[in-house]
Image (tube, rainbow, N blue to C red; front, top):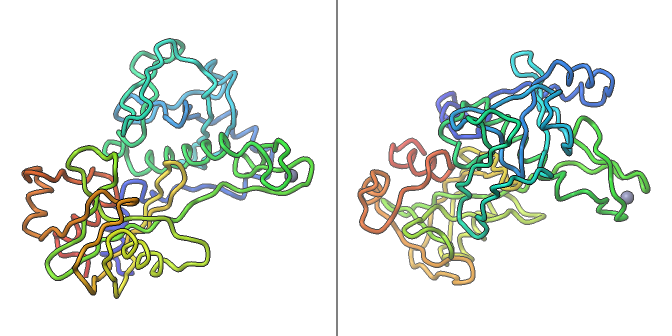
Length: 320
Ligand SMILES: [Zn+2]
């Protein structure tokens, strides 16, 4: 990969900021206690980080909102500062908003023991405002804490497991199996046929929203095979050459988006209604109007999402 490509891939939100994760320190419980005492903590409530709307809000390890907190994770050394995250999902906000079923949770929860300017907000809404470092810290915190929240029991024997390795492992006290945070690979592809690219929409998406096709990589499958299978299943289009472009950690809850360019060999679309509501070919000229927000039907991909990155680079002719 050339220097130009690297620059582009690192412009993806959650695309990595070179955080020193200091993994060698995770197994030293005494040393970790010392780091905790001098560190800063990002509190997350049900996957939502504490933010002032522009940046993450870090609190001291002795802060009272952490007293009844859940799992802790050591995120790493951020320019020498030990950074941690802690789950405080047990807290019950008085004004808990009901957002079940909405595409994106726009509510913000304010804790009575925190400044009024700080609240717990959906990370997706912060994607374009956070610095690359803050985005990496928040994505890591969300992914690992959500894993703890849903993996409290040993997958082998069913006994409640214990947090270990500064939050990067769970150990079973009964059968002694070690469990590690999972990352689920997802392929997302810009499929082109001449001057057009393939866009689809899933049932339940906001009106006018179309994006690149995407799907989970299955066990035993290569990235290229997953791209070809997903595109064929969802749209009936057959794909030839596949190239990897960039990846994006997507902690909703634990995906790694693998962005690819794929060349279509056919162009007759047959939508699988179980997977897609609609799919269509969009010309480069038409996509310019979509991105500008001037298309009569289609809305632009959200900034910060890897689909936006793939489409923008296709329009700029930077995919070759
Ligand atoms: Zn076990």
